[in-house]
Image: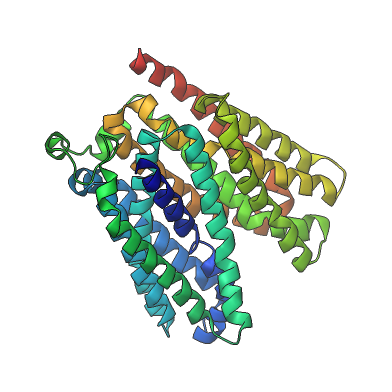
Length: 392
């Protein structure tokens, strides 16, 4: 039965990825209908991101009170309701309002599920689960494309995903008894868990190594999202590729992440989380270095794939190592603040490079990525001695 629960969690991670790329694929149709500037997509993304930050910071309190199963089911239901709300929206303001429960639901389920897997499953499952997120993120645009090319509107694309999320909610509700199997899960928190006071943000930050891992996670998501957002523009402005060709080649970065996470699951048999993170950082460094080589677009394309491969093991390995580094009793709180740090990096750093590209040059993308990677490496290595002292 415990393996059945793992299968449900895999399904949940696919579901997590499904809506993440919908806005980008549907926005060219949406902004014209609402008669707003194309840049207004950023406003919706920011509202979603703020919601995810808030709910991630509250994940420790919610999980201690209700348990992972209930938090996951309710969060997916909130996301489903928000997606259905998107599908019936006829104004930009309505989209902004529905973005609030979207963000709150996404942050809670992400933090709770990641912590549950980190506590109860091997590292390989964390890598493969995040690979499944990539599968979901890749399938979402195809569902939207099916709706748009089939004579329907973007509304139906969102509705299809909403129905899939409702179906997943039903599965999660029926699976609640599975979250308590031989002490390896929780349908309801134990009394001792309920009585333990959730950690405040100030208390979490004072934990040895907490600030370093938060900064490292901030840097990781800044690296991933800046590359994802600006790779296509870099290829157009630096190598004078056509916009269509650049968009296709830029997707190789996501291919690198998805394939890399599938491979990482096998590598974890030989390497622990710390060395998986280091391996990812080294591969990403090689990818960034390739973008500096004077071999035209070919070296940049190879670099993007390698950066994606390098990114692949870092996120799941940082999450999976959290209970070991900070203690199982504090892992939910730590993962919550790590996820919040990740979303802050996602919000802030890609727009900062946009300013650099606008006022200086988009050719500085490799330099920008190198600086972020360097800070990530320094913070991760500074964290390790601090958490080792706690473990000893």
